[in-house]
Image 1 (cartoon, rainbow, N blue to C red):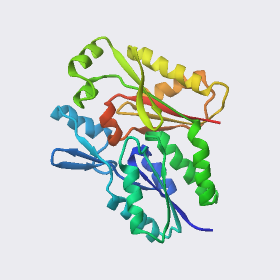
Image 2: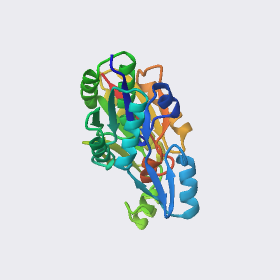
Image 3: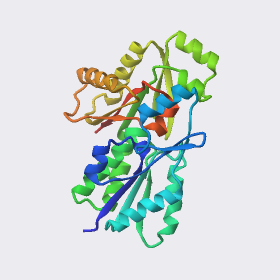
Image 4: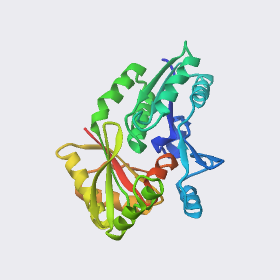
Length: 283
C-alpha cells in the first residue's frame, strides 16, 4: 500500500501534539515586524505576538509561505518515504498560500502530489487535515481521502466572537474613532466563514451576549443533526474557550473528545487578543 504523507500550513491551528501524532508536515506563516521576521509555531505564538503588538503599538504584517517553502515540505515527505502527498491549504480566497503550494508542484513533475483548497481557516482547515490523517491511519486510499474531504466540506460550521475592536482599528480595518465608540458601546463582532472568506456575521452588545449568541448559532447550525466533532479556538483566552465549550455542552450533545487550540499568529493578528470560537462538524 502506498505511503501517504500530509502537508498543511500553520493557519490550520493544529496543536503540536496533533502534528506529532500524525507526522504532519507544517509550512509556517511568517510574521513581520519591520525588519524582524518571526515564524509561526517556532519563534512566535499568540502570547508573544500580542506582547509585541501592545509594546510597539503597531500590528505586524503576515506573509504566506513561498513556493520554495512548499518545495522543501514536499521534498521532506519524499525523503521520509512518501509515495503520495496530500497538501491541505487555508482558503485561497484569503491567502496566497494555496497558490504557493500549487506553484511548488512544478519542481516535482513525476511525484504524486495533490493540493487541496480547504476553503477554510483555523480548525475548520485543521479538521480536514485530521480527517485525512485518520483516514491514512486506517489504510484509506488517496483517491478515497480526497473524496472524503469533498464530502465533508458542507458539514463545517465556524463561529467566533471578538471582545474588542482595538486591533481591527490598529490594522486599518476599522476607523479608530468608530472603534472607540464601538468599544464604549461594548459592540462585539460575530464572525463566520462564508464561501471561503472570513466575514462579519453580525454585531451584538456586550461580551456576555456575544457568548450567548455563539451558543444560539451552534444550536441553529446543528438543528436535528449529530455533532461528529468539535474544536474550540482562542487567542490568549483558553479559559474563555473552555467556558464556552461547557456552555455548548449544556445545549448540545457533544463528542467526549474536544480539541482546544490557539488561533495562531497568522490569523490572530487580524482578529485580536481574546477571541473565542468553535468549529462544529455535523453528520
